Image (cartoon, rainbow, N blue to C red; front, top):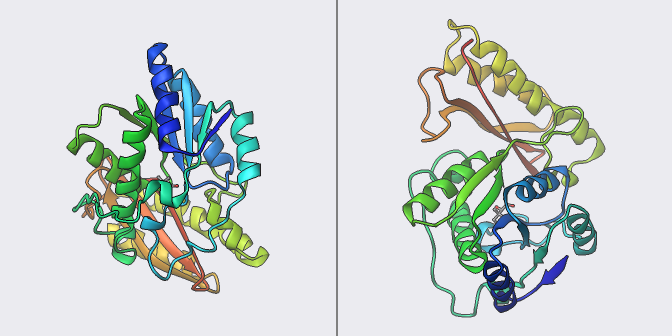
Length: 283
Ligand code: PAF
């Protein structure tokens, strides 16, 4: 596996592959790999001849009071895991390589970025859309793979790719869960042992939502309330949102339909923010 630190070298690598007629898949990440990332890499391998994984903790998508400085990092471990997963190039640019001193441009996907996580993280999806646009231009992949845990991010990036005519396919990879059901996330490492045990309430609340959704007499509001109450029974857990939305438009749903999704975010003792989601079906 090649470690690539500069944009020029990444482009060179991509051009060499293109000349050989090889297709390229990109899996953008912020590192601190877990099974969820490895699933993205393995999926990417099935989709193209060569796999690029970008590892860049993107400052533009962190708010002023968020965890940019403390975001978990372990480059050597990540590089070993990526090599083991069969990644061909690990793109690890510095912040100054990605954002020159006079950087002024922003990509905004206005509607889809507003609600859910966007409501409490203003500017977050602008940062994501901007860095992913840059990665798409640098790597020029034929296909890019993103996880479904960040469902809103996926919807924003699909819209962006369509709106800006990126000549690539976006593929989504299902959520990878711990044995007890907790969705894998680099941020799970912030949880204390007790919080980690309690955090199973998120996936359990989704199971409850799925069960309630099967009963046509249970309203969307009742599902959202049941999920909120279930999570908030755990000391220190506060729900930021628990919303039934349409899986594509992300608009709040009045009733559970064909493509309904329960998306949720919760804070644990004010320190750790966890998200999760699941599709709902009426029968
Ligand atoms: O999902 C992530 O890890 C990040 O938001 C992404 C897509 C790599 C952009 O920085």
